[in-house]
Image 1 (cartoon, rainbow, N blue to C red):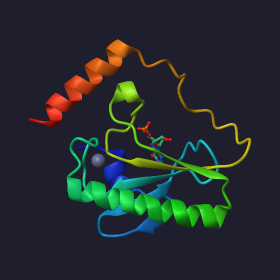
Image 2: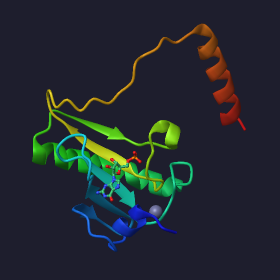
Image 3: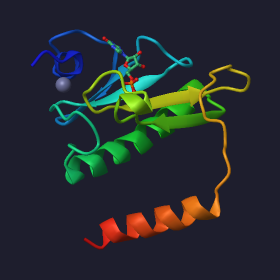
Amino acid sequence: MDCIFCKIANGEIPAATLYEDDDFRVIMDMGPAAKGHSLILPKQHYANIYELPEELAVKAFSLAKKMATAMTKALNTDGFNIVQNNGAAAGQTVFHFHMHLIPRYENDGAGFGWNPGSLTDADREEVLKKVAAVLAE
Ligand code: 5GP
Ligand code: ZN
């Protein structure tokens, strides 16, 4: 399989590496939203959160906490976003699971987010009912 993040995570293609262990490599994003924007990459290929084994999901979030804490101290950030996209509709462009670590600074102009809608009665009832049904399966 020709996956750029597999090659980077396993050291076949060099990348600026902030951290590495048996399961993950943390690299600097080549198109940063803000200074220090980095990516947590598992060394094994999983396309998205649905494929990622639960054990690795737990380790990934634990690593995200460690990295966010270290980067906040090292870079003196004012805030921090952790972003994780699944599927093209959600903005995923590289189909190897990854978590974005995005240091934020006052007035950094890194404009991502959403336009808030409003929660309708119909949507609330539909979503609560449908998700409860799947969780009960
Ligand atoms: P996604 O949109 O899939 O959530 O995020 C993909 C991210 O990977 C983007 O922020 C993009 O800048 C970054 N990226 C894509 N290809 C490369 C690469 O070859 N090297 C590095 N360091 N980052 C990459
Ligand atoms: Zn891959």
